[in-house]
Image (tube, rainbow, N blue to C red; front, side, top):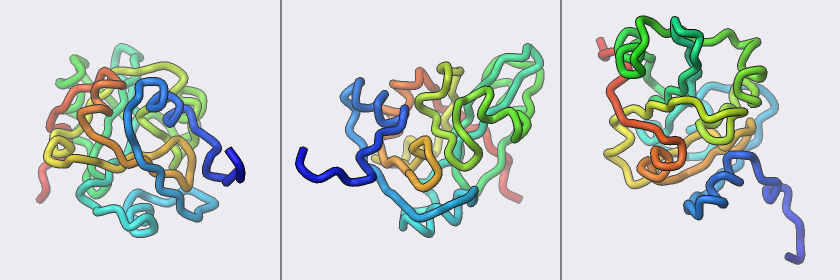
Length: 165
């Protein structure tokens, strides 16, 4: 492998995709701290409607769930709770992100967390051949098939965002 480029440093998310022989593309961007998904999409040139953010919620049962939703939308907590079979769910505290997922805020990928939590991907992902999700590090975005993402995370598709007013 001749030259070593910095972007060859694999994240857990990439290792899982490699292990499962799932094709993906890596988009790198310069960024030192947390920026929201809209800024990330602008930096990578990824279409906003195909860009998804990864959120982690905790149910009444104390179980954790991963929600993958369009970056410009908000979670509908009632619907999300119903989808995962909980009475209610709420976002985990920012300070707990690393402890629960192994990732940091802004670099949280639906792939490669400390353990594989039940995952729900917003149904709109199915409209695209490829979607963009965090690669597991700030500055790294992965482009891959939503079906393959669901496959590898054991995820399901559902409408889990709030209605646009």
